[in-house]
Image (cartoon, rainbow, N blue to C red):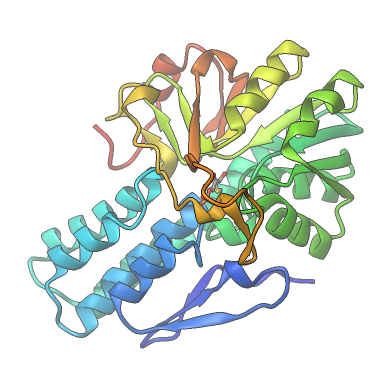
Length: 337
Ligand code: MRU
């Protein structure tokens, strides 16, 4: 089955795939206003770092169509989620386009948003090709969260590597962390790989240590929401634990990082804002209370994996190896310091 795009522009409004309804139904939301796009990002109807950047770019186009104050729309969209730098990256690109044209030309802005989406398709394909080159014949790869096609404008990042490794006959099996509390692994990654016919098994996040100890994992492959200048990586909560377990078992831990997720203005992981989300994501499952009534909850949506635990950063430029500060600053990244 062909996977749907994360979003598509109709010429007068944005159709956005509602990821919250997957795997049950493929439903596109019809968005007419930037505020609806911001709400879709905050409520995780659209999620995955590249996809939220692309959606936000289209949000600026929607604001321009109805003559709204663009700085207000851009700041509103920027505030919709704090951790993935792709959001700021895409909005900065839209801001530069507005500044360089000196006026608001809706068609030109739609062209910039479409170019961002196209660029993401091309660059994620390149990243995926570099990623597959790291995997050995018959490998079993463990993945966290969801980094597939609908989290991007193209083929995905880490999950794209896994799907491509399968298509090229290199992959033996994919292990998918279910990824509490939003279950992106069980709901989205398993759905995408199922559509593509890739053999995979969902595990609870806490099972990865046992799996590694039993010798069932050859590599860990994850995505990211922001890479700091020293190579520290923010990604879905639980990624850090996985990196520690991988190091303890001598298993390579790879992070897929498109250039749009690399943030040289952030010196290290401590400077990355970690989003904390509603307690109900933990206390309730599909609206049913599963925690003791009144139990206190802490719900950070991301964590930071220190650079020294990362075996390689897979980018569209190639695979970067430590020391990451030098490797990252040598990249010809557009829109960076
Ligand atoms: O909270 P989410 O679901 O937006 O978190 C997503 C992740 O952490 C992904 O791993 C990351 O955005 C990379 S998507 C290519």
